[in-house]
Amino acid sequence: MTPTDLGTVRHDWTLPEATGLLGLPLLDLLYHAQRVHRENHQPNTVQMSTLLSIKTGACPEDCAYCPQSVRYDTGLEREELMEVDAVRERALRAKEAGATRFCMGAAYRSPKAKEMRVISRMVREVSALGLETCATLGMLTPEQARELKSAGLDYYNHNLDTSPEFYGQIITTRTYQDRLDTLEAVRAADLKVCCGGILGMGESPSDRARLLMTLANLPQHPESVPINQLVQVPGTPLAGTAPVDPLDFVRTIAAARLMMPRAHVRLSAGRQEMSDELQALCFLAGANSIFYGEKLLTTGNPDIERDRSLLARLGIQPESASGPFRDSDAGSHRDSRGHIPDPEPNPAPGERNEETAA
Ligand code: SAM
Ligand code: DTB
Ligand code: SF4
Image (cartoon, rainbow, N blue to C red; front, side):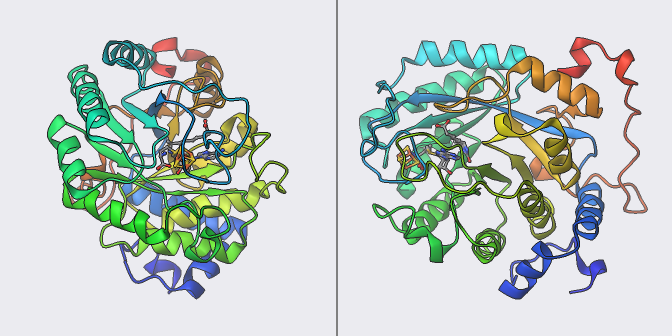
């Protein structure tokens, strides 16, 4: 692999290659990641998704990071599946605030038929508002994936979370293969795949490389790759784990960008604990999606004002859902020389108004 090969869409990554990327001198890694980013995506642009927990807590699974597992006492109040109208209202508010995708998360091992019928109605209503839709409901059968597709779902989020080797120390109630099977069912139903992992759970650099390798060697790269930093919640087994080195977090984003050049890489959970400067480095490394809104599922996220101000200071524009740079088009918007056309110049920070900054 030479630096000029970087940027090719491949599905045969080896562990030495992935660890090699993570171990590059940081500035070389950032240079290549930003170069490949600009070959495939509109620069200075970030996609914005808003999350809503539509069913909270009392989950039978034992994911060691998760405040919603029934096995850990995190003081979280359980909430039944929300009413369709209430979800529609929250989606409308997210759209008005500037989000283009609305992601509905439920603390299920896998959804039941009755729940699927309600969630399908939610998907129809949210989609009718002109928002992209995403759901994360646990394991799906191929039939359930098709049911969501016919309701109009655009994306399904199902994370691998970590490497196959480290996985058993984090979750015992479902296997890595179960996750791969759900991803296959989601793809077979022609849904877009949102799949990534979590850093800061005590994994090694090699586990991070194996996670990225597994994602990049899927038959098709996920359209969206969330890289979460563990949000430590007291009461969960992982509370008190040594935090990930912020520069290693940046390295993982950059390697994800290089290994999945056309994916949207999401700087996902953990932003509330990150400085503006660290987030800027993540965008330089190729992150081009965030969760937007003051809450993730059950934990905090930067509030809208802080994010608007951050994006304005960085000269970053929100990506429009209907614009020319959706996932399906990534890499196809080049001019006759194969270059990305120059973006509109960003206004100087003082010239921005609230609307352009949102
Ligand atoms: N119950 C479903 C499942 O696990 O497939 C969907 C919801 S679950 C909360 C979605 C994802 O959120 C998990 O796979 C994990 O990657 C992420 N997540 C959960 N708790 C987290 C935490 N404390 N910090 C960072 N990411 C977390
Ligand atoms: C993802 O990768 N991260 C989001 C979303 N997909 C569903 C969830 C983050 C959850 C953080 C902990 C919480 O708020 O409960
Ligand atoms: Fe349940 Fe999902 Fe949390 Fe695991 S991550 S405990 S499956 S809600």
